[in-house]
Amino acid sequence: MNPAYILALSCPDRLGLVHAVSGFLAERGGNIEEAAQYNDLDTGFFFMRVQFACAQLNYEELKTQLAEFALPYRMQWRLHARAEPMRTVIMVSKEGHCLNDLLFRWKSGLLPLDIRAIISNHRDFYQLAASYNVPFHHFAVNATNKPQVEARQFDIIQSESAELVVLARYMQVLSNELCRKLSGSAINIHHSFLPSFKGAKPYYQAHDRGVKLIGATAHYVTAELDEGPIIEQDVARVDHSKTVEDLTALGRDTESQVLARAVKWHSEHRVLLNGHKTVIFK
Image 1 (cartoon, helix red, strand yellow):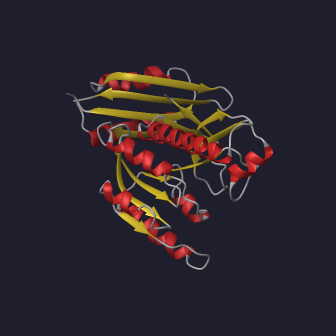
Image 2: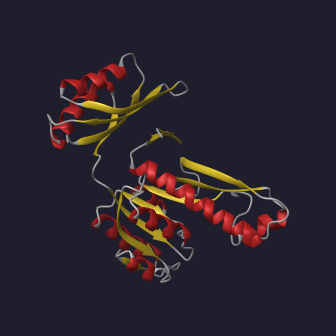
Image 3: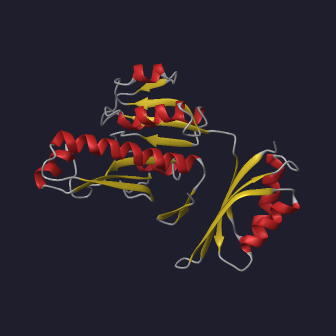
């Protein structure tokens, strides 16, 4: 079987881009297995994801020739070996539904990840991590030690060569500096009541107001709290008969599913940044 690759790219739109990319691959023995493209008429940018097999050139040779090819088109591009799972670090606090869901999907072969470590500001899930044979790192965080803790957390992320950091209900606000370091490679999940019900016990607040929809949003982490480019969202309808416990359970299920889809699409290199938005080739 020929080595398989995924090429994701964006550039200013112009005539003949699909022909140029497919021609570049064909000249090097690349057989396209899946392709999708999108033209954003508002920004004038072109986005493309191509999955292809190629035995003629190895990964490094392809990267070198792609860099030369992309230059006149002002392309931003990424090339990935399809067989390599994405090295991932998960951060979590005291709510474990998203962590548990991701670990189960990973071990079941449903997510192309290599989960290298779990980082937490509580000890609650060290046994869960051990059951999946994933190293668990605990850091107690307070107002005085946060910069030092973040430095140590980032050291772990770097030492594991993590390509993705998942905030699976990690209830600490990351500093602007760490957000910049993780730009485009960190995904957060939160309930979709924001900005209406901030702070503690949002489902109690929602129940008190008689909401009819609950949901979740997965997005990239930025320095602007909970305002990064959105990857996935979903909602569930509720009515007057639902208790706070019902709302909480439905909310947790929705959060788990939304985060899992966002992580899957990101790890399959299906998400391309488009300013403050995303293009997702499902």
